[in-house]
Length: 345
Image (cartoon, rainbow, N blue to C red; front, side, top):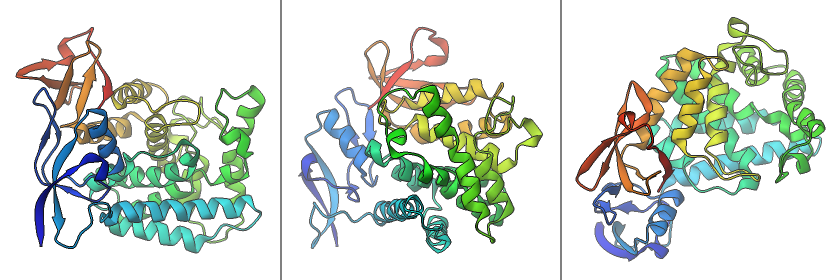
C-alpha cells in the first residue's frame, strides 16, 4: 500500500513518485505531483537547494531502492548496445539478436513519449555518450515516425536504424572518440569514416533491411549537399536518413560531451529551426520542434536577466520563445528581443 512520506533529497533515487507538487522560492512549479523521479530531476532539486519533498512509498519500500522499471530497462538497453559495439571493436561480428532484443524492448516498453523523454533527460557520463546516444536516437526516431504517422513496420525499422546509426564508431580509435579537445583535420576525417565503417559492418550481414541500411549510411547527409559521405541532396536522401539526422543533432547537442557541457535545449531548437532552411528537412524538422518543445512545459528556467521562471506555454509560431511565468507576472519571450532562456533548472 502506498503512503506519503517526506524524505531528504539525498535519499531520493530514480523511480520514486512525487506525492505533492514541488515549487521553487518564486512559486514556479519545478516538478508536478505524480512525476516519477529520474537522476536529472534529482540533480535539479539539489541545484535549487530543495532539501525535502513528499513522495509515495510502499510500506515495505526502501527510499533508496529504485523502482522505476523504465529507468532500469533503459539502462539495460544501453548496456546491451555497449556490448554490441565493444564486441565489434574486438573483431567480432554484429550480434543482430542483441540488436533485435533492444529494438523489441524499446517498441514494447517505451511507447509513451513522456516516459521516453524522462529517460533521455537523465544525467549520463560523457565517456558513455556513444551508447546512450544510440538508444536516444532510436527513441527519438520512433517518436518522429509516430508524429509523421508512419506505418508500424516503418517505425520498427526506424528504431533498428537508430540503434545502428553509429555502429561504425566501433572501429574508430577510442582516443579520437573520447578526445576532450578539438579534433585535428586528420582526426575529423577519421571520425567521419564511422559512416563507411558502419556500411561495411551492415553489408556483411545478409538480412539487414534496406531502409535500415540506408538510414544508417545517410544520417550525416544534408539537404544542401553539405553532408557526408556522398554529398547527397534533398530527394536523394532516404527518408530514414532525414529523420535520423534530426534525432542525431538534437541528442548530440543536448548531451554532455567529453569536450563540452550539454547545450540549452532552446538554443538547440533555434539551431534546428535555422537548419531547416538549408541542411535539415524542413517538414520533418518543424514537426519535430512542435512536438518536442512541449515536453519542456513546466520546467524551471533561468533567463538572461538572471530571473528564474517557469516555462508556461510554447508559442507555435516561435517555438524557441515560450511564455514564461515569473512570480505572478507573465513574460512572452517572443516580445522580448533582449531576453532569452540561458539555462534549464
